[in-house]
Every structure is written in C-alpha cells, then in structure tokens.
Image (cartoon, rainbow, N blue to C red; front, side, top):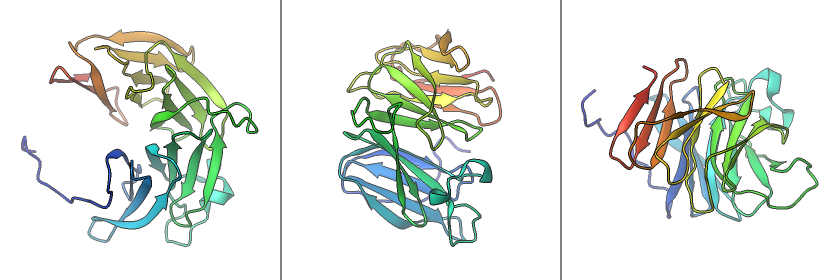
Length: 244
C-alpha cells in the first residue's frame, strides 16, 4: 500500500462533529455518531460499498458507539430478531450523555433496550459519562471508558460488572481510549496528559505494565485481533507498534 491510501467513499450525512465510528467484526455494518444527536447505520451493498439504511435520533448527545453481530449464546431475543438473510441482526451500542444507561439498538428493527450503568437497574443516578467503548475479541465483554478516571468492564447486554479498572487519568474533558489484547485477558489504555500506555490485567484488575516510548500524550490505540500486537498514536507525531 502506498503512503497515501486511495480514497474509498465519503459520507457527509451528519450536520455537526462526528465523534465516533465503528465497524462490525464481519465488516457488514458501519455506524457513526455525531453531536447533531444522530447515529447513522450503514450496511454494505453487493459491491461492498456502505449505504445509509437508518438514522437514530437521541435526546442528548451520543459520545461513542460500537457494533457487533451477536451469537446464539448471548443474544437476547428482543435484540436478536431480524427479517433479513443474516441469522442475527447486528446490534448497536450507544453511550449517551446525561442518562444513566447504555442504549442497545437492533440495527434492523431499531428496537431499543436500555442497560443501566449502575449496579442496580433501579438506580437512576447519572454516575458516569461513557466516552469510548471497546468490545472484547471474544465478544462477551464491553469496556466502557468513563470521565471518572475508571474503565468499567461489563458482561455484554447486562450491567453486571466484571471489573473496574483504575490507575489512569480520564476527566470530564479527556478522550480516554482502550483496546483489548487478542486473548481478552488484558486491556491497553491511554491516560490523560501522559505519554505512557497502561496495560490492565483483567483478572487482577490492576495495572500490570506501563509501555514507555512516546514523548507526548497518547491519543489513539489499535490492537491486532489475533496476535499480541498493538499500535499507539501520540501527539509526538509518531506511531509505535508494540509486540511485533
């Protein structure tokens, strides 16, 4: 591939800043979120080009999105029905400001299900703002990066907390990001104002390592789905690939 990749398709359906984008593991579905309060859902046509199929409007600002195709083993019936040729409808997850829950949306029927951020579903206190979402490679867990200096790992489709990860910094105006190790046993995270990458052990719920190599703030992370390889992007104008 050349240093300048060829332009594929450009989508300009939003009217304000686009703040989050996600593609399903099977690449069939693409979702975008914007400060115009819309989440757009795209699917691939026969030529492999994404076409906008649905738009979902929220009362408050969506900050982050993720999308996945559920399996028989952990797909609730309310989200799983689909009239299409796909066995399971891709499910959209949206983190929205000023509400005490995540929103799960069936991308075919647009049926919504809300799942509380809190330990008890009846608790309506807005305890966190989700700023970034990361699905585990095993598709069983969801890591929610928050504005309260913690990441919360939930069992997918539930408010059951697998663990709460703290040690990094992520305040109200930060942009926390995290990605999973391909084994789903570790999470890589940035930290506000720091040049290090934090590595969390899910079992112990602690920082097991810090990766040093950048000289300025880390703002982007990406992990290989099948290998122990991770890339970090920094304000120091560099990208480091770890574990090659």
